Image (cartoon, rainbow, N blue to C red; front, side):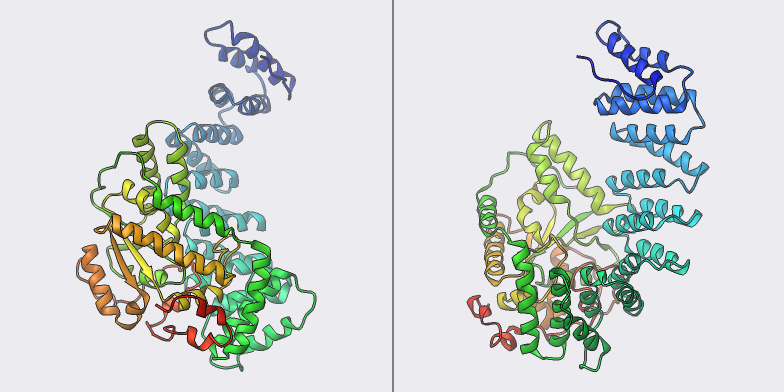
Length: 543
């Protein structure tokens, strides 16, 4: 079957010659090279692109190699060849080409971003950050490119580098409120709360869209309010009186007001704001309760195919799982004070890898080995010689059997908190869109708490040596004993975690302020102050 041809006459003739030779010649790609010989750079690129669209990567690579020989100084051909090599799995050759291109032209944005995407897949986040930071050091780029770089770095856990690009752009005169909002969020994660406030306030002053970007909620998370004299109260109320706010903007504002009122113990007013905020979001998301229940049942009944990989020597993956707002962030931050522990935040790789293991090609063991290599690269990365690496994605409790199939020596810490306190904390929080969509309705929250506990009980019965349970109440009331028992179980070398200051790493969860404060017991039994205003809490177990 022949394909239609398009583009320049030379590239069209080359494709036609290739189609004629594909069934006649032993090396039909030579027809492409002969027809393109003497052509311009664009002829080669058009022909290669047409072959990519035809899903003929071998021929596309042959053309691009020929193009490099014909046009050795062309940065666009070098970029195209690097992309083709990357797609075909020859990442070393692709990286070499990209680095030579960037050495000649440090401001080549397309090359820098292609290199960054490749490094991300390899888990080389420090090298990725270096490449993107270099791009912006050599030349100022338009705001869209800067935001793209900031978002990529944030997604890769390089908040300090992303914030640095924001601050450099702001120092150079950037007034785009989107960049200031990004800066506020990143600085908050890094614990630089005063500067984060200035960036958030700048965005609010410049555009009403900042309300849609959850800036009020971001402001409210920067501190614990002492009384209503704080200027944020007047700011929030002024916005609240407006009648032109969209649903998302109003919900974000109401969550901010609820948090501020809770800080000053105005529970009745806080509950009123939070009830309206949750109703707005719940009406928009409609979390699939039945699907959740079926997924829990499926996990309990699942038996993976036979086969298990050997333990990886020299390092141990640590998974902190449990309901969000059950103490997972606090526990991870405390453990990360140990010099041999590295906290990677909440990685999102396991669900994707689980799908690839189920539906990929090759033998089951080969799929396991590929998945383990991919996940290990993301967890270990290229910036730490730690021996224990933490992934505190709470919902990894859905994949405990797979975790132990990939890493039989993994340590899994299951966090649990009083159901009523846990539910209230979830209900009071505005989460990023697309995450924790059950958290806006108490019936949904109760369903997830029940399912998560049932599933963890199942895993603990099946893998008792690999799972250690931690109660939030014990961690808050007696952290020394709790952390001592946990350190012994993890086989961590002796280290006083409570006497050590936090490492100042980014915190990307809703606990970004609280987890940096001294451990306290104020949140224990907090539900009691809200029960008169939120009676749904009484439908949950008081455990």
